[in-house]
Amino acid sequence: MVEGAFARAFRSSIRPVELARRLAREMDDHVSVGVRGTPVAANSFTIYLSPSDHQEFADVRDALRRELCDAARAHARDEGYGFMGPVDVELVVDESFGTGWFEIEGRFREGAGGAGAGSLVLPTGDRFTLEE
Image 1 (cartoon, rainbow, N blue to C red):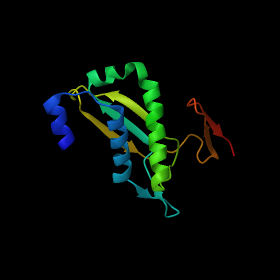
Image 2: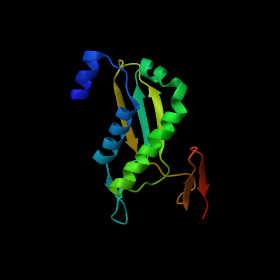
Image 3: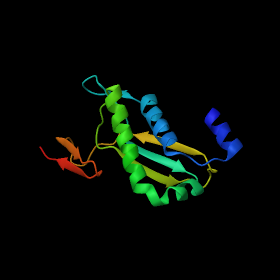
Image 4: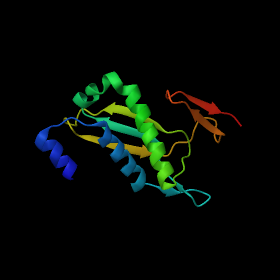
């Protein structure tokens, strides 16, 4: 509520750290319990942005998505959450949002091919899926 009032009052643009914090809160607010009794968090996120904010991130969209995925994985590791599949973030325009407004929707999404051995992520952000 405070964030919304601030955004309306100052019409500020969104900072990536705000997206990461809200993404972590989305994970915390909707964590579930898996079959083995361990906490499981959403792994697929859609971030709805105003047209102007979406355009502001246009030149760094891929890097921002990678960093937000890394932030989600780090938060999950810190909190002991598991995932049902790989972490993915999508940035989408919502024409009804004004500058400084955004919303994050998290979903549980299984990875392609069902359960696998995991993946290896290089410092460059390149990801390699490990087979059984």
